[in-house]
Length: 350
Ligand SMILES: [Zn+2]
Image (tube, rainbow, N blue to C red):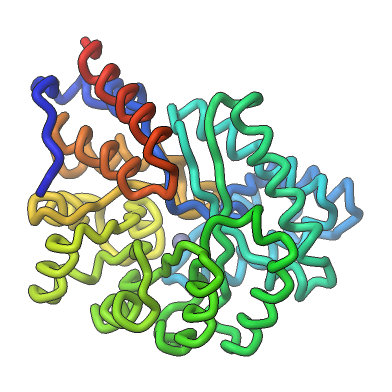
């Protein structure tokens, strides 16, 4: 059932962007390497003496035109080459947290992977310690909370995912959950059944990308084989009525990323995006930015553009923000505190 709140008053369309920006929210689907802006990428390249094949920040930005997920992943991996030290990971995370704070994000669960970086000769410790130090500083520095979700790269083998998990175990306390990212089609969730079972045993919270480009079968197996608690993207669920019923009945959250879907041509236009239909079908959807430096906007930009394109209402806004806290892995007392701030923001919005 959709969340309703008695204090949600109708808001005129021209006032919706202000409401969307002011409303407290959580972000649950954002890959930290995807927040690396060209300016910081060039600064880190200079600091670490890494050559870039683009002559300028603008030339790099101009290259951010993609026909599908794979074209994006190719340029994205190139960008990660500038990250060399723990301080680089710390600085990149602080840059994102500052943007998130400006968008009234109260809590974020950040995706990262170590396999990209260990592939470049870095240790998992360098990556995790740098990211975690920024998350630990988030309350004092940015007035928000942040935690980390380690994603396996699904184009690599399950054996390599096991290796990645082992390397992360000494830093277990710095990671809240396990996810699955990268090239989806041809790499179904069941490929990682054993390593997810192990992660569950170890007490990690479980999520996975499914149904971004690949069919609903990938969402079914993420739920039934991997036993995930949230589905990242999941927009292809709309083609399977039984799956839609399951998602609604079991309150399975979907972390939807509208501008990513637009940029990677999952939907031809935002006006054709199905998030409004998902909400109206009782699906627990949320709005997120995925890889904001590459896809043209942070979380508030995702909200304002999507609402403008689909004509969504203040009630949709409240439901999405409420879902983001309900779907997060924070404890009950922090959730209650954040929901109170959400309700207060809607009560006082004029
Ligand atoms: Zn993603």
